[in-house]
Amino acid sequence: MKLFAYVAVAAMFGMVSCNTQEDAMVTNVEQNLEVSASDNGRIIPGQYIVVFNEGVYDTQLKSVGNDYDSRTKAMRGEVENFFSSINPNKALPEIPYVYGTTVVGFAARLDDATLELVRKDARVKYVEADRIISIGTPNVEVGVKAQTVPWGITRVNGGVDATGKVAWVIDSGIDLDHADLNVDVARSKTFVLRTKSADDENGHGTHCAGTIAAKNNTVGVIGVAANATVVAVRVLDRRGSGSNSGVIAGVDYVGATGKVGDVANMSLGGGVSTALDAAVVAAASKGVIFCLAAGNETDNANNHSPARANGNNVYTISASDASDKFASFSNFGNPPVDYCAPGVSIYSTYKSGGYATLSGTSMATPHAAGVFLLGAARNGGYVKSDPDGNADPIIVH
Image (cartoon, rainbow, N blue to C red; front, side, top):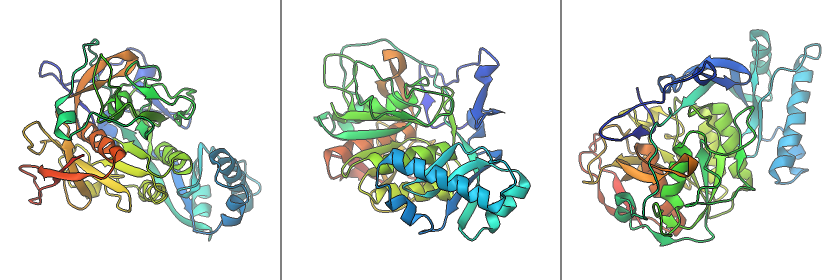
């Protein structure tokens, strides 16, 4: 079973067992699908991501400015008009997400007849099947200790004060009241259907946030960019599962709301998605630096999105251990991999005010995000035993 976060405790790796029928299911647009981490990349039947051609809705979107809520509201109206125009006698399909900033389009549940009409419409650039993204559920929590400096923070020359800098964590949410994190609750947002909070019920997103920006105080850990502000962009549920369409919605939000010099961390991924790649590249072109996990399939990162995305301010990160050796699980390939970072046995913040030790390219990526939050990255040497024969540089501040 391949996960974006491998949980390490007493040499054991595992998943939380499900206690109820609901715990064994994930809701994607009101449809229950049995999901586990091994389903990462599986097509969601009947659910599609539709991207319009450039310029089709420029006038409508420019009229409402750059405010995320205004653009989203305007785009929903245009999507409803689109469906009325292609099939005026049919009820609107279920439309869970619309996009108006990075890509212009929507996600919807479509029957075969409507799908064919959408594909044939001249306004549509492409249609792709929506897919599951699932990182799994870590099963380890440990108590609060006196503050320690995890080895990865030392390796990248982190632990530097970054008060006032902002990192967007596109993940399972963040523990909104964790004592070791500065969370901007007001700008935190959930894109998980039928949830109202960006609070982390999984642990993965909180772990990433701590590696980026945990406070320099007397407890827990210290982040690479210590004391920076983190914003939760929740796209994964408590089982660590979501969809490409939901992740694109989160990226669209960051693209509309983030500022030049902010950093976005994406410690997730799955199968190839042209729409997800395009959303990331477009958001990064606005000045937010995106750090992407290479993935944990021991595979070429070019086979996975958004890891394969390339563009200005976009960096894909592989993982190394404490001996600077390439992690056995890490995806590889340069391009798209830009840097390697610590990703084995990483201690950081966790849900419910706790701390945990996890491994994965999910853990490497926030090290890089923290470095970029501090400023320009440097080459701190090269990883050993890179399977592609082209050793990735290890990122340092």
